[in-house]
Length: 71
Image (cartoon, rainbow, N blue to C red; front, side):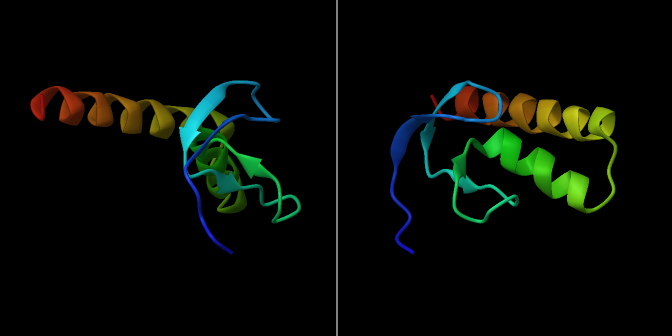
């Protein structure tokens, strides 16, 4: 499958995303945002929703810091 950069709306959370989408683990076909992809992957490993949310927040914090450093 060719992975293309797109702009879309995540059918799970309803947020708009840009970039290469993740594939939902539910059907392995539906494009979803990266955050929901992370949440689904964490759930598959038995991570609680609360802990998965902390992980997503940590990723965003570090990504934001890295983006500021490169400017």
